Amino acid sequence: MSIWLVMLAAGALTYGIRLSFVALVHHGALPAALRDGLRLVTPAVLAAIIVPAVLFTGDPSRFDATLGNERLPAAVVAAAVAWLTRNVWATIGIGMGALWALEAVT
Amino acid sequence: MRRAMTFVMVPMLLAAACGGGGGHAPVGGSQGRQGAKRYAAGLDTPGPSPRRYTSRVPHATRRSEFLAGVRAELPLLLGVAPFGMAYGAYAVESGLSKAAAQAMSVIVLGGASQFVAVRLVEAATPGAIVVLAIALVNMRHMLYSASVAPYIEHLGLRWRLLLGYVLTDEAYVVAVQRYREPGEASLRHWYLLGAEAALWSCWQVTTAGGVFLGAAVPDGWSLDFALPLTFIAIVVPALRERPALAAALVAAIVGTAAFRWPYSTGLFTAAAAGLAAGMMFDRAAVRARGAA
Image (cartoon, rainbow over all chains, first blue to last red; front, top):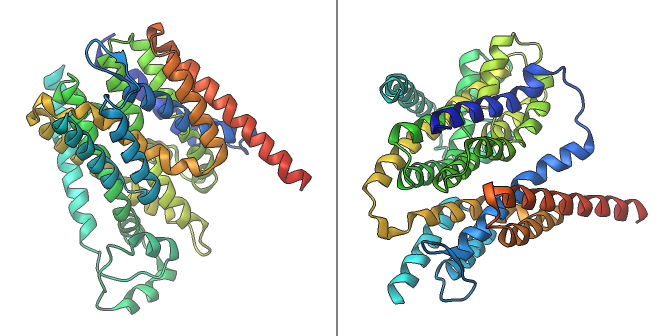
């Protein structure tokens, strides 16, 4: 499937999700279980992407959970910044800076 | 195909630039509304005549509501802008054409899901899987849809189709505060529209900035690391809640163990496992509260 078809299909699905209660179904209260589930989907999916993206490096990728993998300490620093500041600019900036610094040293 | 997209994109970008420019004009007055004030605290400069605004609050016009929505959205755009830049740069660095990278910001319009899409496309994941993954990441927008629906159900279908298009995190947060305020609410969809217009414009402009920036960045800069960093910025502050922490931890472990599974089935398995763990925690917390 071409990237354009993927985008159109995903865009239509996403639009459908946003329209769901606004325009598609007659609105009612969202069941509590569904509401709680929807809140948890994003942290679950993103965590399942973040951690492998940090731990599998190189091309072809291999698992490396040691400090020799500069991405690991850089990600830990970024997570600390995100926890303390909740600031997007600081998290991305300091995380990239940490990676570049570690790559320059090793 | 690509030329056709560029044809569509140019006027959209122009509209975006105009929307952004128009939004800055009224940032002079101090505003009495609590939510807007809190968000605008960092940006508002002291205005010449606060009385002008207070006297106008009972007689909100379409224009005043729209501009107030734009103004309330501006501080949040400080957080949106780096996502847009990072996305644009990451997308072209991963091999998407500039037109496709920009078009995704118009068609899908969901930051985290766009990052996920780029990552999966880069890994040559089958298209249907990518579509499912994008929809999964955007599922939470159903919450916003359900929350906003009662406020805009009196509007015509065309209005609801328009407002639904940009019903994403940052627009929802701002608009729902306005809707919950007491007082005359019949024109507040203009406020939501203003917030959405500002957000949409910012997302398109910063995507474009990232696209051109990313095309100029050499490979040695490890720009693909912007993906985990961006997600860390989204997820980590939310982990103060136990169910979210449980969901993230379990999903991270399963996602790592199942990383090599074909067709990203590991990602879906990890998401499901994390979701189950989070909901168990949720229910345990509810029971604990009930017992106490």
